[in-house]
Picture 1 (spheres, rainbow, N blue to C red):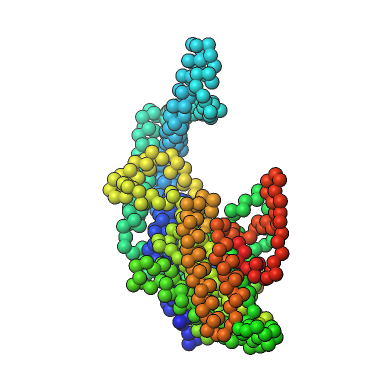
Picture 2 (tube, helix red, strand yellow):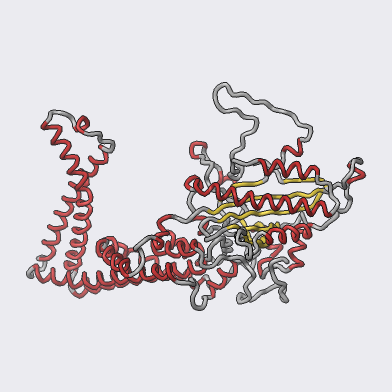
Length: 586
């Protein structure tokens, strides 16, 4: 009933024996992130340097996507670009020593002339518009503002200045190219022919790289399976950690989290223990707490259970079964819900619980964590709702019995959609043979920029050295003053800001309320079966269910007994059951 398998070796587990995680393979989010490695150089560098080449920190859980093909395509994209830059560097080096430096100067001047002419042509339409308005104003003896409303007049002036600047630069590069071509006393045609010979292999390399990138994008869009071939040793470690039951989180530094009120944004994503699950959008603050009393009208001392009428793991098992029933595959109106166990532990406590990282915790180990409310690790029942991985709503519930009471900690997180630029593979006409031809033409159009990227080849040895050192999982062996908590989740990092995802708010509300309502009803059913008075629980549950219409953005901004606007008043009404009214806060 509990996800996980009991290992015969309590200290080590082979990487080939993967834990039973709930990583979603081949989702739309996985495809879009794979495409992003070809479209976004900064994103690709983050995947390689902060995920693949970082064996000292645990990989964050993958919600709604699979990290392994993203890493594989990041390396493929990096290899294509590095080979392109290597060919460019090699051609320029051979040309310098074999044909002379003046030929290289001529070649670079050609590229500069093309770049400045292209930039000047882009500024020409706005500059002509400004001149036309000035001419009309001069003929009619009226200002340009009277002729037409120019809201971006300053921008037009800037474009006119840019046109003049690029025209001057074109003239300078043309003069330098002419002087360099005849620098050795030979006819200029010889240097021009040599420069053209050098330019040809560079252009072919750039076009070939662009063509192969587009072919890879076509494969991402059409491949039925994104994982292919055998996994490298580091990829096996990534696959193992992204689906592991145990998550090691980092406690945020209070000094680093301090912000000025001028820069305060209530929609900023805060660091939570729920690594990789996105924005914390809803939580019961404080947690729902009820006393374990027998039904009746006697005093609390007579009705109170000195020993709990149930174990915490029995409640968790009941909730797990109840939630899985609503995700029955035979029901066409089911919720696309996956239920599993997730254990969170702070990185400072890992040294005392190292066995949790070696393999998926067994049934007995999980029950020990669930029943021990003072354990360093915290077990949450994780319920994930998603269709294609683009919008992922994850609900966490932790049950604890202590102080002769039951405490339920509920939190809901949401991963918003990936950037729209990564969805180009879904657009009409952006895949296939036509897309390959257009990619080659765009590469020729951007020839100066592509040649200029040769300076990035300096980072290649560092990237390869980091990959060679990342072959071992260095999070399993404790090291002095080296915490292993997850530092980054690329899915969380590339999700859209919350304030740009308002259209998805209703869907998130719906998913949270469906799971929340069923959890409360299943808990009530379990408590009734164990002869626990649920009068207070029903009242608190009613407050939680009816408290809708606003999402709790992590609790950073709290307004209590406050009034907004002129003439507003605050009325505080005392209630006899203060404990019940505090539950279900949003």
